[in-house]
View 1: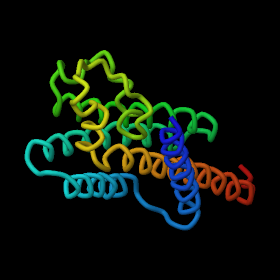
View 2: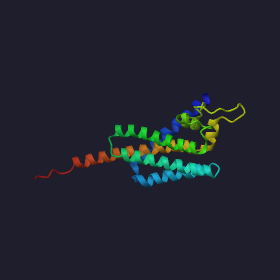
View 3: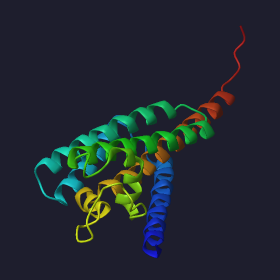
View 4: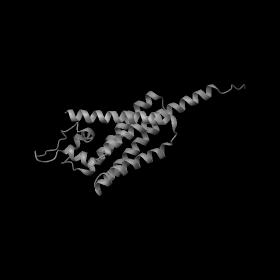
Amino acid sequence: MSDDLLYTGVVVALLAAAVVLGGKLAKRRHWRLLPMMAALTASVTALTVITGPLGTRSLAVMLAAALWAAVLFSTASLVRHRHSLHATLVSVVGGAIAINAALVAFVMMRFSSTEAPREYALHWLPAMLTGGATDLGAVRSETETPLFVNMSEDASLLPLLMVLLTGFALSYVVRRGALTRTAGVTSSSWAPATSG
């Protein structure tokens, strides 16, 4: 149990660093949303594919990355012109959906419903990321490798990269939107009044 807490703490610390980095870079750089998402998706796909066996796993990684990117892009598009509090709440929900949808798709392509019972799908992310969920419903003998270990090894860096890059991207978009709104308010307040 202490290992699970350690891994969870490390993931939370890395996620916090990614969120802070996204907010800081939003002040210094202006990236368009589509190229940024394309670069993040390519990074996730490339790093995950090269850290594991090629073949059907690579196809599952590409599908998961494409699904993650689509949901994340939709979320980012939805929040970039919203008020900061609303944007933050929608970002958290949309980011969680993007990550979970992608990893569920990955597991469904890699494991049969007998190996990984589908009713435990919401446990798959914590199982792959930190080992925090070990009861995934699969019936295994004492000598077999636990399902969460097989999932973690097969997914490799995919869950961690998705969590970190989701935090980074959505933090960047929310902060960039806030900066743009502030700049718009400031410039309109300094605009000279015109008489009709």
